[in-house]
Length: 221
Image (spheres, rainbow, N blue to C red):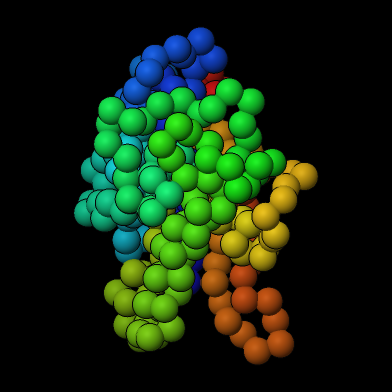
């Protein structure tokens, strides 16, 4: 089973001078160009059968471009939202509570402390991302693909956030709660991992991380 993780295009919350309150913002003009570029590249180079996306505005917009280019319907999943945008019980926070991170609080360095005023901590966030991954693995193992259509359905695009990609790495590498390294993925950077349970070999394979060849130098952020 192949996972292609795509970080969303640049949003206003990614700008260093962003000082707004609501943390669910749309793409910048640069981000809109990035989304169109990654969508065109994926349509030409990554044949996939399913498209998942976080429900936040920046991922919705990015996924809509990819869906339009590939013809894939978008399956929105709240488990793919960025850290701190869901409550400790895993449910999405209402827009009125989507505020910036607590000053000086970095989730992977304080994994048991909430990263936003009303939100979850890093370990609770990792749990919901892990639930998404496990649900995909169980579906794959319970229905081994036979036809070409079924095999294509096991190649999934996941439009998400930098934190989700980092949590995905921590799941795959079976890492403990404390971090000494950050997994940095730039806007519309693509990650390719495969789940292949073969006796006597590791179940996961990492093919590439932060692939950006779809962006010209002036579009990289």
